[in-house]
Length: 496
Image (cartoon, rainbow, N blue to C red; front, side, top):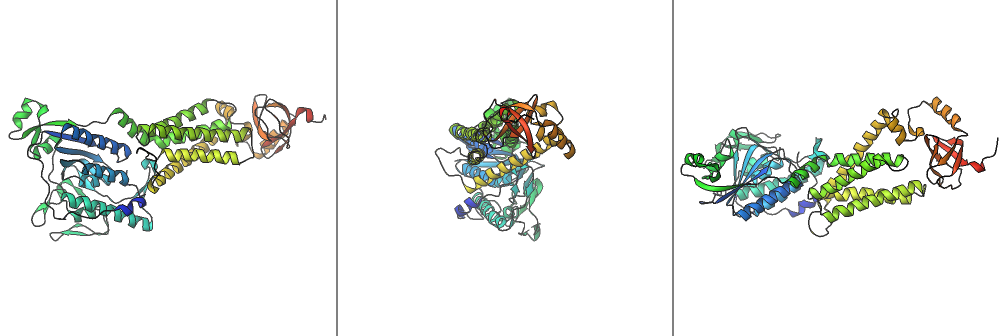
């Protein structure tokens, strides 16, 4: 996953560049007692932010003097990356990134936010230009026009700030973001104009400049134990043999932060959230087309409950906010049902219900985990709207597929009225309409003036000629208006 483009709300908050580009790299403490290792082994999304935040808090509680980020990621959201960088800035000790084995896009920015970078032999770091990502990470496209320059400017300033603060090569870092930047070091073109820079482990550890300094990486290390050794320590929990091999290294207690079950569920939800939304929409549409309340309605409620509850598990919202949004969804659906079955044609009730449903879906997908009410940022609103668009688009595609593949199945005929199958030819439809004239059935919902009526085992969409009839009224088909049967109360039909 690449970095999100919706950053306009953040552009006005760019800070100054207080550090010197040639600042002396920081050195780890001489006698650390505890080293904490935090894994960044997935896309940079809100669940990753909470994992890193908890890991740093755990490192502080254990008295860790060194914090190591074990990085293997394709990147993710810029807004989340910025918040992770802010969390790293709160750590009082020495910070290290071990690129094991890729830190692409947002992962490269997070690496630059540490004071020292090591890489695995097959490690890669770079390609940090922001792009626009579809919800769920299904596709990537370039940012449009002015937006691209604004977002790139912000990301470059963010990268420069942390590169200068931590003593990294600013020119190399900027070449990872700005493809219009050519970088020449010691007379050699390191990054050509028109290309984004991505470094291998060997390239990143090259000594360049005067005085000689690594291009970006402090060294290539096969495993985490070698990284600890490069920092002058070893894991005292590894046993006597390991201690004997450690030589003059200092023993430390290594705290390895692991994702908790709720955090794993949060990553899962972040991956399947759009799918749950699609299932919920499709099931509700099918339920609204069917009489009574059945399996589609149950599936729809469960899918939406998982979607809204997942936002709480993923720490996108508080439990109270998730409940409020879910109740807003249920209320909106209730308004839609009332419009369809009791007050058809009034429009206003249905529109209010639809707006409530859409608002609930948009609001729940925002990061409302902060305490207290706050207005959503344009960035959050943009992401939520794109998630909603993806859910509606996916739902339409599935409904069209169902309309094509399932009309002849008995299950489908129970869900949809016979007149809605759409599979008969025009001639067959006209013939069917002629046969239906004179059918006597029972209205399944109030007819005000439209609704549904059951004729034997066939459910039809029906409408009266203007009169209002209640549910359970005996009606007779007297004609058709398009695909809808026109009915009258049986007592009102003149004998032929």
